[in-house]
Image (cartoon, rainbow over all chains, first blue to last red; front, side):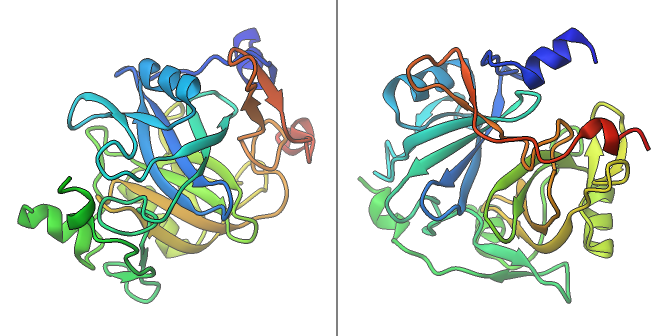
Length: 138
Length: 138
C-alpha cells in the first residue's frame, strides 16, 4: 500500500481532500433518528466555520457563497460529531435539528422513493412538516 | 417558482440529474441500523444496473468503470429502497449488508471522527470487522 494511501486511511491526521473545485461532499444525518437529512458541499472555509461555531455551514454552488444552514429558514443544524470516510473525501455531520430541514417543507430532502414496480416514477414517503412560504418570507 | 424547479421538487417523475461528468452522488445507508456506510458515484448505467439487479452498482472514478459493490470483496449491498433528494442530484440507497462494507476492513467507511478538542486529529470510533487482506486476495 502506498504510504500516502495508508496515511489517509489508517492515520489519525484530519486531512480532508477537497476536489478540483475546492469542495468536499457533506452528508447531514439526524444524530437522534439516523435519518439522512441532506447532502451538500463545503469548501475549506465552510468546514472551518462548522468546526469553529458548531453550526453546519456549507458552500452554496448556485449562490457561490458560504451558507450557514438555517440563516434564512431558522432551521439550523447543531453539529454533534463530524465523521470522515476512509479516503477523506466525504464528511458526515451528525446533527441535532428541529423539524423541517428541507427547503421544500419536509424534515429531510429525501422525501421520495423510486417506485419498485415503475422506476420512472417516485412515491412520496413523507409529509411536509412546515410551510416554507412562511419560513422563507422573513 | 420556475416550472422546472417545481417539477423536480414536487413532482413524481424520477428525473435524476447527472453532473457535468455524468455522475450523481449516492449514499449507501444500512437499512436496518441507519448507519451511513459509504458515499460513492453512479453514472446512468450504474443506476440502471442497480435498479435492474437490486444490487448496488457504482461508477469507479479511479478505475473508470462500473463497479458492482462486492464483486471483489463479496460484501454486496442488496438494495431495499432508492430515495432521491429535492433537486434530484443525490441518491440514498437503503441497503441490506453483511459486516464489512469498507475496503479498509470496517463496517462503514466512516470509522473516524474529528476530535472535538483538537480538530486536526481523528479518533477511531469503530473496530475492524474483517481482514481486507483475506477478502481481496481472492
